[in-house]
Amino acid sequence: MKEDAATTGPYRTVPEDTAGMPGGVPYIIGNEAAERFSYYGMRSILVVYMTEWLVDGTGALDVMNKEQATAWYSLFLSSVYFFPMLGAIVADGVLGKYRTILYVSLLYCLGHLVLAIGGTEPGNGMGLTPRWALAVGLTMIAVGSGGIKPCVSANVGDQFGPRNQHLLEKVYAWFYFSINFGSMFSTILIPELLNRYGPHVAFALPGVLMGLATVIFWMGRHKFVHRPPAGLDFVREAFTPEGMRALAKPVIVTLFVAMFWSLYDQSSSTWILQARDMNRVALGREWLPAQIHTVNPVLILLFIPLFSYGIYPAINRVFPLTAVRKISIGLFLTALSFVVSAYIEHMIAGGLRPHIAWQILAYIVLASAEVMVSITGLEFSYTVAPRSMKSIVMAIWLLSLSLGNALTAVVNVVIQNEDGTSKLPGPSYYWFFAAMMFVTAVGFVLVSSRFREPAADESQAAV
Image (cartoon, rainbow, N blue to C red; front, top):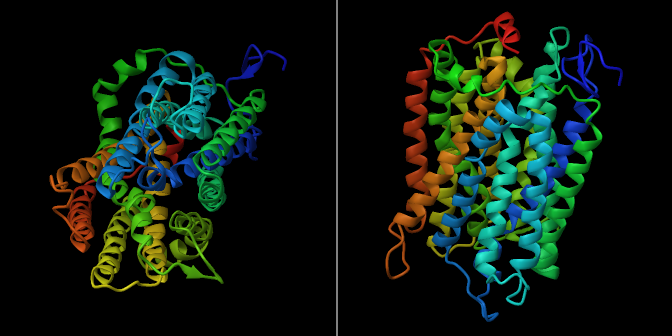
């Protein structure tokens, strides 16, 4: 590429002056789809692996109980969404988004390799027991996946200039679509591989897809806008009066949305364990418990256009939907999804084997909440962020996932009795989280009523 005012060396540093779609977007979407296949495929079998397949150093079965597995799983997710802050500092202050994504992706691939080799057999040649190998591999994946998250989200927005800014909402919807497209296939395939061939193969394929994601991203290097790092001045900017005001809204939203993620991410942990006690025969076959989670990405793929082109316009005709109003409605829907889960657990505790259609109903409610909370919150966070702090604000948004999963981990540790029983047995566990979510939703409505959301011209000026 010829060097000019828009480039530094071989790379473009400012968006093209066009009203159309930026050239780097297909590579970002392709990278995200492959990376999310990798991440969600590995994640879909974690709880099943820990409760059914885990062995000790001698090869004897050494599985975890429900509370232990949920605590490990939630701690891993909390770590995944804590490391975005580190990735954002490195990207915005030192390396820039492109190099941060590329370098950290290599560590991500290595983590999958450790899981596939070290977390399957006692004789793995790594000097680690499977449980320790699991911990090391998950730590690498947490650093890798977490480190790239704020950079990838912010990198989407960096590709747009003033003339095509109107396409940003559509691209974030497609970005979220790619996440669920990759997740949909992986949550069907990877549990089947675990069931047929064991953990070795089931953990290996997500690693292959992460390698593919890294290659796709590298191939787009000449198409991307490479925003140069701002240096560590952005840290000082964060503590100026203007910086503190800019961060106030994302931080407040983060604190409330954390409870949403505490419930939402249990759809791939406690809901999977709950599905083991349900009648899972549907469409002429009996589905594996971990495969039921595929309902979520399928629903998201359907709900994104349904909400964007049908539900939102219809509601707007009678009730103006701002970003914070969408999030508020989503929080109440999240509480409702766990009310359904509590009723399912009540039937199971009563000796029944309810049909999986009941859990699909809970997924429908939760997927509606996800569209209103997650997609809206992602766009809202990017919109209100100053240009030099995009990755930091993305990291603050992702910190809500870390806090929510940390809460789940703490709850599952605290409720364990010494005799292996739980302080919140059966449906009381789900009622507890439903009540916490309802109180949080009410609190968000009261606090967010003071927000003034930026007008379109203000939000574009911040990009």
